[in-house]
Image (tube, rainbow, N blue to C red; front, side, top):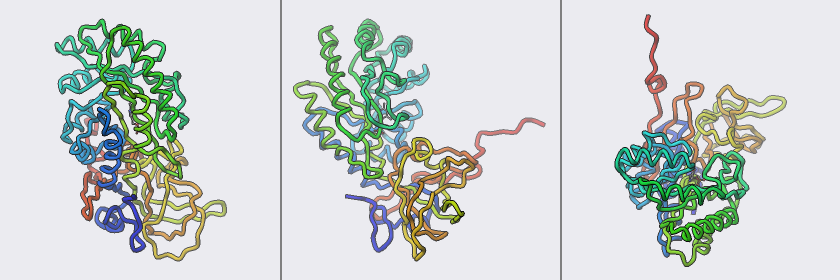
Length: 416
Ligand SMILES: *Cc1c(COP(=O)(O)O)cnc(C)c1O
């Protein structure tokens, strides 16, 4: 079911008209549906009900503490990639014992913070990181729980910027070195080997890359067992795609089913790190048409949202559906590039979109719940926009629009 639907000619989030969100909070703004987020999470959870599992939502997809909090209330774990994300999880009431820490560049202080909070596991991405973690844990007189992120060298058939599981990508330990690094880990006094992990990319719309990755990882699991290294969990990462433009990604159920099928007969806890597939289609970006600029060559709809608010179109040619929220115009249908006010040719939200538009119209940019606000910046000194969570008929402002004061917060003039 869709949590964003047209009702009486107006696009709604659950039972709230997006026109009233615009009235209350202005545009541009991100609007999320609580029910949509919970429903996606629950689809994973129920698909895995016959399997020992932990869903570690990937915080970087959407890290607002209200989003983290509703997931924590469902019992979710979290996949973090920085100490800042751990801080958010803790502020949101998340359980550190359900946190896994990924990322290729963990600093000493990030390791200390995570060890202090007793997270579930460090997903270690290189031999040198392992050495550092052992030293940091020794200093604190702790054992660091570790899973090695291995790079299974499979092609996820996704955009090159979001593909992470090829041997030329910077992520993870090369498959052929993984056993050696495990043996090194086993000899380290302050490392406690608990699992294995891989994450092959994002916006993956077929099952075969996941199956291929898992097959390789399981070969490693068996080789390690022969060395008397017994892993208690297997973390398959995230990366399940969503529908932006008619893609037909596998459902959470089919995805989980395929993975459980490959795992059959093994007593391992299965960890998943979905991000986009939990929140991507649970949010829209609402924006107002400021100007229609119809040149002899091209029609532009200049809106009040821009690449600094949603960078996916500029950064990875991400495609987002764009629809009118409500309009009483009987303007003719035309093809527009929907662009923002930022001084960059790359500042567009959608190209060649057929729309009936008048100035002042409200538009919804769909599928904006993941990698939207979290990748926003203040470029062109644009205050970051508010985030609104709709829950049934209620709107909650879960992040305020930044002020001009916020823009220069922390800056200072040189002395006279
Ligand atoms: C980004 C990331 C995820 C989440 O990826 P999605 O495509 O949003 O599901 C999971 N695990 C790791 C290690 C990541 O870097």
